[in-house]
Image 1 (cartoon, rainbow, N blue to C red):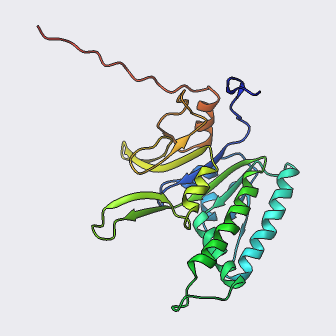
Image 2: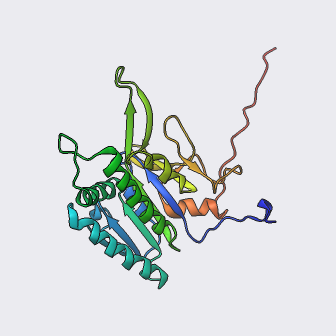
Image 3: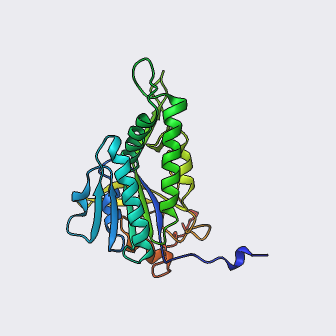
Length: 253
């Protein structure tokens, strides 16, 4: 019977779901991953990777777009098997969801009275399309990074924030993060007059980041530099998270 005592951390490939508001450095983080790489560019943000060794495809928003994606996915799966790519990026899941919805509307002509998609028909089709393809990507022997925007959930009456989750359709906002050991949230910090991009590896407030690799040993700092090499340095033990300084107390006599 296998024992958890014998489990080791796989440092060959890092598979991450990267979540954050626009401008918080998600694509910057992806751009630091090993190359050559490939990007499924659903958001038209390839300019953020300019000058780097990433091949990419973009997909027309419409019925033909999903077919183009399926073709690109087959190519990437074969290319990774041949050792052509070290990293595969999905940038981003919101754009991929929109494309899947276009495909579902093409497959089933039924609509709501207002002409929109039906929840129990088209959204279920989107879920099935997304889950199947994302699982195929996660099975690749490569570094994988899925980029997702944030969806802030508010109480309809009070307007108070009651939750924050990745911007995905229905149950996918919970299921897709569950595929990953590493779910990082992105944030920024002003320091010395400059803006620093940071990744958050532990849950803080509504941001439910996590790192199973960091685990009970807390290999990763709660916040660290927005860079693949920085993350791997802590995971491999090349860097060690600083221990909290013990607070000394003095008693006045």
